Length: 79
Image (cartoon, rainbow, N blue to C red):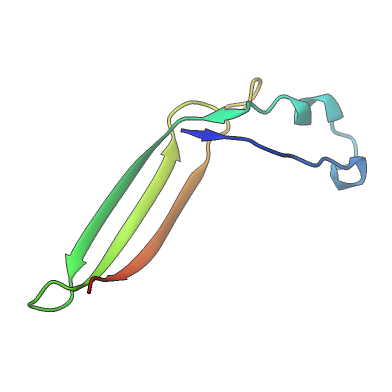
């Protein structure tokens, strides 16, 4: 779960010809699932490489079906 804490909106940032009121329709909360897969890089399993994926399972906008989607590679080393 994520909560929107602060958002600054400037009229100059909006695209010309679009309804500005639609930009105020974003929800304050996001509910997401997270998937992580990690593989060992050595025999002692202290160094790991992983893939992380996060996606909203509910829309973050009140009118349009918009979803957050984030992915990345992570490297971990445990002492």
